Length: 206
Image (cartoon, rainbow, N blue to C red; front, side, top):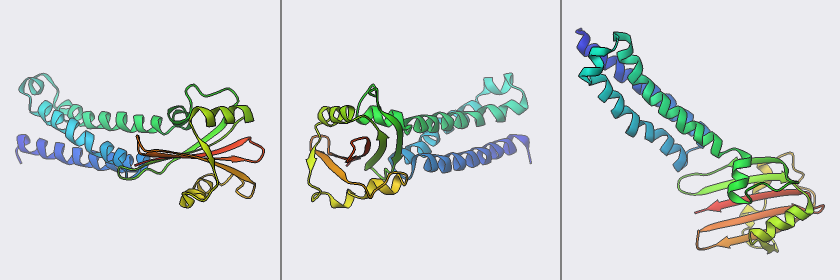
């Protein structure tokens, strides 16, 4: 087959393989939610057209070695996927989630921050577990407008955090706080143990 026909076919196969791997990594890193979908689709919409434009550009073809004519266009979606998934990984860092949802900067006295991201579709759910001093916990409750919850509301979420943080003892006594923000369509739930040294937190956005 003529080289001018085989090279576009090879390029398409390579880009297809890369996009498949990138989409899989995006869903592994970010889950099946809107973030994962964006991570899979963005390289396809942005990087792939640029790859083909570069490949078929006459000036690029004339000034580039034959091997690089395939390698450089293929590198564009790879670079795009790496950047997007890198940003997603950073966004899921426990300290970053804490700063975004509770307090920036993180107060002195907060330690052992853990997190999970259970977002799906257009719904967002982040969870945190951390240790802190009683004074810091009280400040976080006040700063974020959380109020004491008797546990009768939102019962579906009362046990949610514990399964994501198995090292936290569920059997101890917990005090529940919550906030329902209709303006931002979000709900906040906080669990504080009896010693007021351990906190579980869930943020849900609709």
